[in-house]
Image (cartoon, rainbow over all chains, first blue to last red):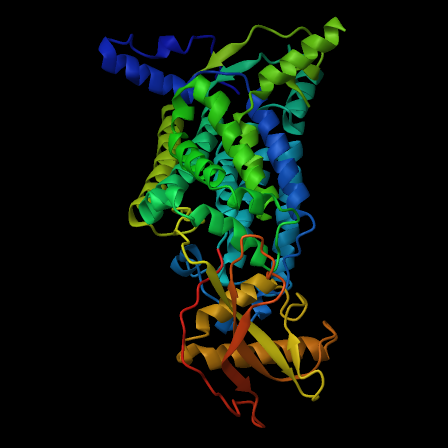
Length: 322
Length: 191
């Protein structure tokens, strides 16, 4: 945090002239408006904590023993000639990944731990996709870990930041000033962009591959009913209820496509942000309940839409006034 | 761990400007993420971790389902056939991965025998080392299970019918002893 200077963000930029300049200024503000590190730091703590909770029971062992004929390498592994690590290297990588998640969560050696979590996480999450099935849950975790690894997410809500303060106190130096920086803004915005790309892509795929039939045919009803013929069927009959009410099935199908295609608006409009990400969260929760297809770890990325600094500030104020 | 926990009055915040190389790095990273996705969206392809996210995108308009299911043939005459649904049989490969892998090669003669031989070898290796309690197998049959979809899913528990599409029996030397195949029919992977 050295090199901090009490100059305003606006002072770094030439005064906007005309509409284009205003747009450019809004663009810069979107990405780099100086903010306190608390929101990003709290997101880091929650995100890696949830990842650790999710991956802790996962055993990374024995994948190299699976016969070659079952393999169907994904692009990343084929392009970069990544092998499936044999035991005991694979379990060791799994243990190192979990240790990195823990350290990244508490913010100890954050730069290193987030980088290790990203590299090992990319490998370990991608590895199982080399056996014929790619799901759409792991990629957003990889992108989010990559963004956090490049960020200064350890500057708040971390052991690293506590240690820095204690050292300053020990030396008799004044408390380091709270720094506002674009460094704490862009990572959260970048995760938003990743999520927007994911859902926008899903919306486009439905339009391109399904067209109007995706909404107006029996497709949605058939997809719901098919789940009851799966080896892991839903534990309730909500899907059958929806499938048997055509108007409801068509409405939900249209809503899904509309919300997915509208999600880019959430980047630019505060009002859209209040509606669209929660709607997608509820949609994924609904898919879990109705179809027994769960996007559990994917849903951790939603926490980046919550302004935790404001939430925590409000809680603190309520605490004081009580 | 909050910044506010340390002692002393908090001084006024200062604004730290972004270094130009960091700004360029951010634009580079975000640009790569966006362009990678746009490429897959335009081509309707997947290059993990980039993807066009085609979950349930292809319209389903067929009120029938067909699934290829591998069934083990035991050495003993009874029970004769066993369902290969225990996750321990081919661990760490989850059962739905197994089904997808088998479905992928069910109609591809060039790869089918190799996969079924590997399946039996791996199963047996795990069985003799006590990693599962399945019976000894002498072969695998691939069945196509088919259902007519009902709006109340009343027939979901059992398929309406099944067709033997291939049988792989291990010969004395480890190779196939017999391999009768029936006429191929289109299969659809479960989404």
